Amino acid sequence: MTAPQASWKVLVVDDEEGIHGITRMIFRGYEFEQRPIQLLSAMSGEQARRMLAEHPDIALILLDVVMETDNAGLQLVEYIRQELGNRHVRIILRTGHPGYAPEADVIVNHDINDYLSKAELSASRLLTAVVVSLRAYRDIDNARHQHPPASEASHPENSLKLHSLGQQLQQQSSTLLKQSARLQRLELSPMARDMAQDLHSQQQRLHNSCSQLSLPTEHNDNIHLVELATLCDPLMQIFLPQTRREGWLLDSHLSPDLPRQINSQPDTLQHLLLTCLELAILRAEGEDLKFSLLPAAQPGQLIVQIRQTSGLPAASSADDWQQLLLSNARQLCQQLGGRWLTDEEGEIRFQFAI
Image (tube, rainbow, N blue to C red; front, side, top):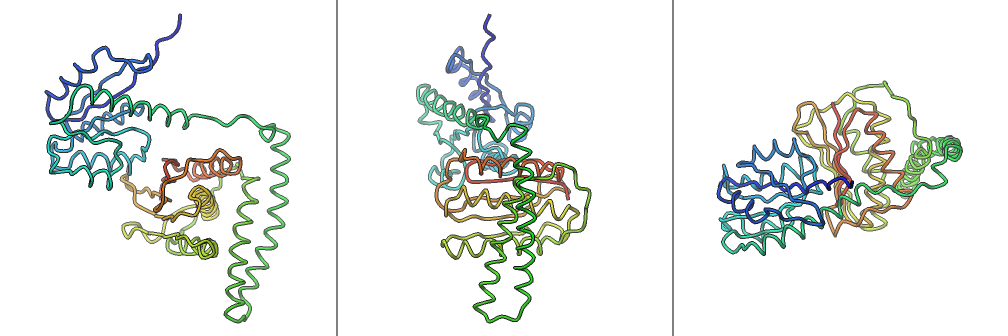
């Protein structure tokens, strides 16, 4: 006997009990792709936060704007997208007060997927909007859980060969890196100094690329105080030659709410940040990026965010190099005791304790 299909979870967030009743009536017995729709209810933004924690597989949220405050709904959107890092759940805004949240302003400034006015809303229009959103969620969810087919590189013998090759390349690139660093300390003309800095940046990126083939698996307990300002600036300098050459911007932001120093593993942290920036640059395909260090909602936690700030986010590539960078970044994040939040829709985001 075939097991029943899991239901689509739809969260209704509205402070009017009547809206919940009408919605339950519209969707009673309704199925999408032979899967029933399970309606969950929340009467406020705070209740919605608890429901999201209890049901991380919610596919769609039907959200009111004006509840306990005039913008409680929009605050919940920011909580879902920014603090939870949840980019895949679909959000349909339903409002009986369009003056509080004009459609054009909401669509441009908030990451929602549809906007419906309660005054003009029919059962047919709501059903159509829900089906479109569930179909989008289905496609996003399938892409998130897709695994690239096993290749020859995944064979244990080939993995060992790649690891050994990576170590050899790292040794050679380390020598080049030392030489380019030594070159920068010489008295050079301004033009030669710029060329030496560009060369050193290229060597740093080459060394990091070689290290992707032989990522250390053991836990590193080498914890020191790390100065955040002196961590960010050299990172930006590494990618400066490429930004100048190709004409795009890599901006950085260090939140003033963060401490000046943090306890961390300097080498692992730098390796992680370099790997994430390389991945973000490949995905952005010449569009502007912003690298930010931000305080998390939980005390003692730091969020690293790299997001695309111009153009449309490109679809995540399945090429082997990008997949390797993503896998290594997640592994390095885990070595730092961190939590990976998202790597979709033009954004990479993770957090770790400080």
